[in-house]
Length: 538
Image (cartoon, rainbow, N blue to C red):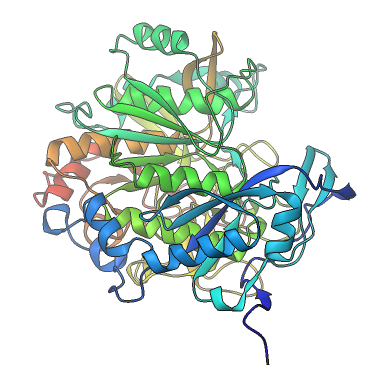
């Protein structure tokens, strides 16, 4: 019989080494670190049904305020007290308690954490740098088995990558067409975003895991495209901060692309950039901080970072998905880039992989197209795929999340892998992402043209901000509505040509571009419950 003090493995916490890693010695026993402990939702509260909420039009929904959510779905005082007692017993300091996010942040030395969670932390060398890591599971006391649902931060390996691609300086695979570029206002016009809104009164949250921005570049850019300079605020999470690297081909390109696209589409909205370290802990804490930010109150979150599902621990997948369900409860739309490496998502193991967090059924997954136009009219739009190794829209079928009920009639195929798992299909929607038809931006004082599905997430976030302004309330969890009520309303440009590797585009929804790129005016009308007259696409 196990004793009360015995440690048991925390389900789903098992870690493997990053490929190419090698241990070079124990972690510094005196190194101080912080760890986020995730707690269960209250046991006496009815679970929120994001799926039920999502099938209703915005005016039929009853979102919780952030204060209501904390009171009814935050961590209980009893569970928090148990973690505080555990920390005291193991010489760990409690540095932050957030009931709404259901998190307790602990601080201490490597030695103390190794004893508290019965793990061995080592230093590893990797082709892309060094990290503090572990293998196997985290262990927790038996009496906390029903209280703790995740422990993040012991391992600080890089968790995600930005899904942006800078156009190559050469003519590229598309010849003369490689010279096409747009600014966000041109894209908004081509996609017929409602012209009587600019996102005023809305807050767009951007999640960033590296790099930074320079206010001077933002001012220069928006003056260049004749728009008011948006209000941009940086928020530090877990010690992350606005830190431009000076390399326009590095993470600064991601940060500036997000700001300039979101601000260019919704110049009346305020933009808050949540900077966090590129770890699973930092990534999750940035998302939950944005969701539960009572001061700035974002109505839409744009996430342009991700990684194949296979590179995440089950506890992290569960924790992120739970946080995204919480976003739905408080009326926050989360737009996620679907990836830039086709159906394999950049892995070379012979399998197809969906990118996470885009594969969560509780986000709006954003795929990529190649967009050509004449004047203010679209002349051609196909799946973005520049060929092996050169970039292609992410998409496909999840190997983790089963197909949600609202996707059942969309024709989502089983995964192309041998398991034939019937999983969540992605993306849900798409937009211009090919660097050869990319976005003109300014990064670190230099002009550049950047693409990738990283551009599509803030593009859709800006559109959602405009729609929220017009409706006078947040759209919130929009994804099920696309499948159950909006797919046949003329709200999308159906992309029927192209592939991402293992999956082909076709009429209706497909695992390359979802329902397609937006017709913003039609989408707004559909969400208002009064679809506009359908117009033919050129």
